[in-house]
Image (tube, rainbow, N blue to C red; front, side, top):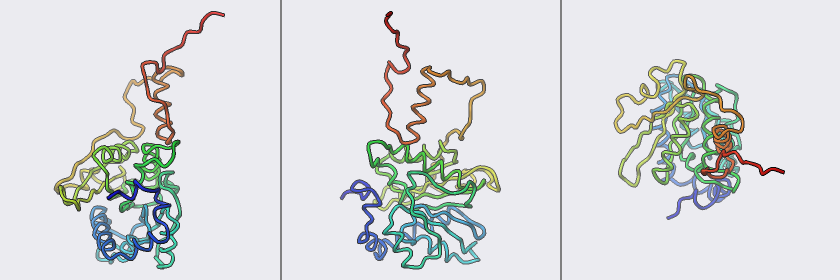
Length: 280
């Protein structure tokens, strides 16, 4: 059975009929409740918070955020963003409490810096691993998403993204993009080795009231793989600025273009080599 993200882009796959079927399926509703509650457990929000629901769909997860009792730190205020107009239309018909935004997360997260206390995403990030046109790339879409998400969270904020990677390469690509954006990252897998295994990418933004970074969030949890990486904008001491036109400068420019989702030519032994012009 083919995966939905391998057939059509999400805004086309989740048309009116598919969106209605997704929202009314009791099996999907039960799975969504389970995964949302697990994500909330990992977020561990001590008090009512402003939460961004990424790929909010018809608002199934948002309803859970709105119904968290005060004894559990809720209820939470939430803003949802999704690329499917049909999904958001159903959310409006269901009169969900959150504010809704029609947007493509592969183009970034268009909110003011530090606007949110936390973020949650259920079964959405894997859609970024497919290029939808010849002038975009999965790496570029992931980079724009995680850079925008990092900026939109306050210092000390957290995010939990549940996703279904197709293979180990996608798992590494997603976690590497998050680390490159500046997040502390850990991956928790529930049901390891079963067909119902679920992956949760737990992300932290340093500073604020967060103690111990990602290690503090996942302390005592079994089966957690903490990803190591350098923070955003970190430079080695004594690192020289590449001179314009040099091979290092060209490589940096190509990397910047890839992060923006542009297609660039593969590197070769000729990359950055100075061409000698024949005498005239």
